[in-house]
Amino acid sequence: MTLNELKPGQECRVVKVNVGGVTGQRLLDMGLVPGTQIKIVRNAPLVDPVDLQLRGYHLSMRHSEARGVEVILL
Image (cartoon, rainbow, N blue to C red):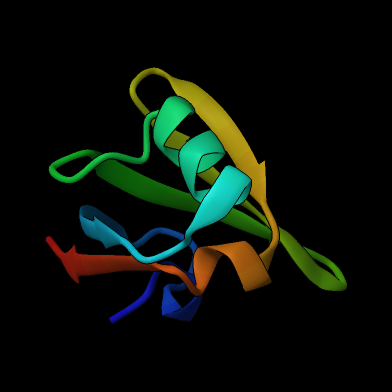
């Protein structure tokens, strides 16, 4: 399952980041490393971006980027 498939209120744990290059490194730098617990807070009215809560802060990202993050539901 990938991060973009989840709905607001669901919680998950990162399994793997399948995004390469600068974008993949940026996601890792922002805390999306394997084992990190994430809560989906909300989706914007026009779908993008999705608001995530992890490691004590909120992170907004596009669904196209979230498609590259493998997760498991908690």
